[in-house]
Image (cartoon, rainbow, N blue to C red; front, top):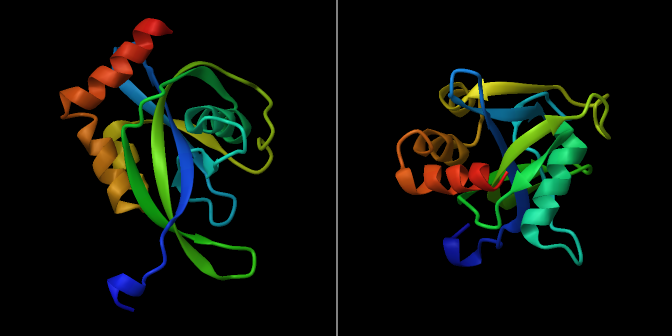
Length: 157
């Protein structure tokens, strides 16, 4: 299919839940997908009447039990093929909003369907299947502009 005839991707939002461990290293919280158990960011569809970062914050709570402070500034986008219930695939474009996690709930909406775990940025970049997301995670270790968005968020939290 030529690019001119390619369908536009469907928009999604995601949280990038982070915190600093006791050694001052930035860690990222990831959850397993419900279908194949892949490590992913908490993500979902935009919600009517909600700002995109608020929808991402809700996804972090529902999928990972993460509560914290989310940025209104996205740090990037990535694409992936979402498998629908009928087996078809659709291309999604995910906007990623960083979130400094304050607490993790013991019980949360999808706790019986997902696992969650804190990873270093390097390990998270290796674990995700989406190339663009992997590059974004790697960039967080190198780009001051991205790190400053997260540091400003930490200062507000």
